[in-house]
Image 1 (cartoon, rainbow, N blue to C red):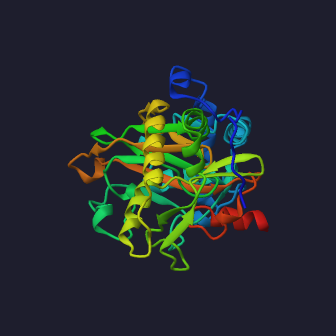
Image 2: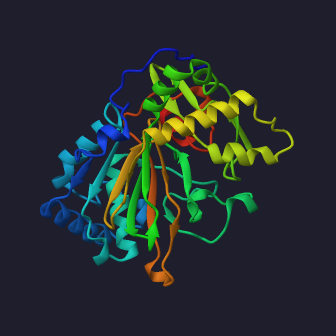
Image 3: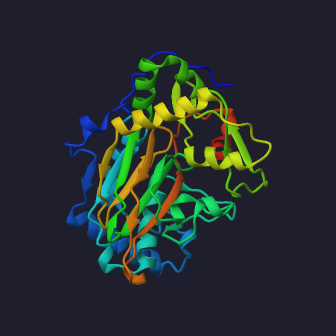
Length: 334
């Protein structure tokens, strides 16, 4: 069982948007040689004759990026928690080639894991026109709604921007560790509440059919602070009769969390050809709502992977079997 943390956490992953927004060290501009190596790796992958999901590191050779990938790993665990790779020539690539690039890069960073109950390893992030509130299984990434701060599944997510929206859709990041420290300084009682159980809607994505997950938002385990943030799904879970109403303390804790997150946000526009890579235990993310282009071929399109890192942090036992982190937990056991 996770312990409660009651003291400020000194961690490089604790940063404020105000302190980091004018820096550029979190953006890596790929060099012409690195881009050439990636384009050549796509050809090698095609020549292998293998299905996309059968491609390993050997079928996507990118030795020119070895030092960059080492830097990415250091940033993900033990660093600020995220990196943006910039400059991929996605306008010159087909969708299949862009998927090959993301998959190939991902194989050099970690092991891709399923993102839903159907076992899909790669998601296209597009607006489907559906709404979370009127369905039982549509998730926020399938809409053009503003996305509240949340984290994805597994150790790390990778998000490639193929095409941007007509307007809006700005990316928003914040440090979960910094937010916790600020809440602890202001309201230690609510920092405790956030380390106690909340009921979260599984959105029909658990292979075992479980509809509700019960766990804290913050977890202190093995001297690491990890977050599982599903504020929207905490609220949609209230539709189930067996879920107790949120307590006044829980409502107050959520409200303070969102306020402090807004005070610490880093907001930026992802460009076509950007790849955002972030640690799901220390970084939360969201986006502004967006208006898309009328032409379906021009509409906002992101590609996403969830990865288990080769040397990821120890995970609290409550993550075992969870929709978000069960795959990474199981891989740690192998």
